[in-house]
Length: 453
Image 1 (cartoon, rainbow, N blue to C red):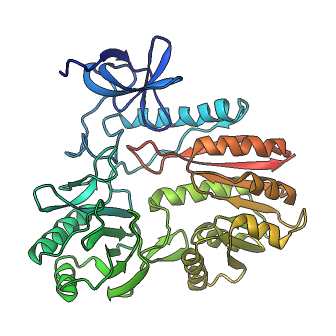
Image 2: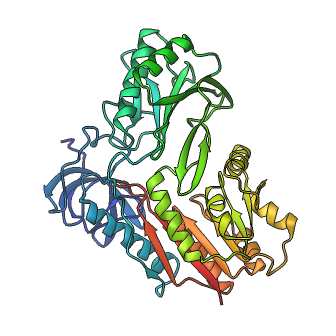
Image 3: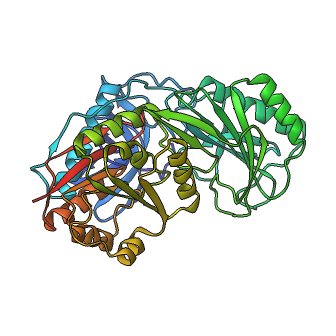
């Protein structure tokens, strides 16, 4: 032990919305990077702020009876499944509690009923997309895997991951071996040199198709046809291989220029009665099976009618609007990402949907420029980014006076903030439905229908 290191014993009492464990010391809140409620831990205070402290877990003195053995060998240092050592029933309990806490503390909405959270039938192998990063190693070699917990620039070599599939694990090993055998340089995120940046694998839950996407710096993939031959020979489930090039320094796994190395350049997934074409950079719900449960709940809440006109804001690739279109008169989707709009239009055509249109625009600008009249829209659907709705957008939506407003969110705190504001504009929020899209993580999805009073 470092003689300057200050260690304290703490009783963990809760789990915070960001996944941190919560304790108290001398009347002050302490957030820890580990520990479960009911545990006594030894920790080091690493940052002290006026309202709270941050601590690093050093040793568990007394374990919680809810603690279980994490399945993954990388659990201790991977930044992914931070709750894999907590019994799943307790994960759901804390997620539901966090939704209720956000509504009450941040939204001042004690009267909103929080329905029992919908858990996932699959606790592992539920993701349809995974991004694996290349990085240079200190010994002159390289790694291909996932980020170390709390480190944006440290990648560990992945042996197994229980989030996507065994096929995904074997594809990582195959590509890692191929890059090593051809001495292809790996990208250094600190010096911005090298070539191989990411391996992105997408696979469908219902149709069994797999896409391999190689994301690199500018230039052609060395021995591209050799890797195509090797992957397609070893993995008959792979249906397409694409190459995305990027000049950006940002550490994101998207490309500016795409080349199809083999296959059609897309995979297709089935949700309910609709078929969705997914390309390398398309947004699609990452858990296909839970997405169906989310959408079913959303549509049940909406109770849409055949004469309804629907405005679908932040529509992404249009999955909600396309699935709803047969039940309503018209759907108008708005999305700022051009590629998402093109994908949405393509998917509408594939499914023969003719009463839907998509517009590439900022939501705030679209609402200002189109000047829809109050009462001209029956239903507004919003599924915004984690930051939630811009205050001006909130006001613009409220000015349309839609009788029903469906809010889908991946962030209970911004959901609570925004729905509090909408209540001040004359809307009522009777209940919300939390849904667990990502077991073993702190992420929570929820949906609520607001009604004009």
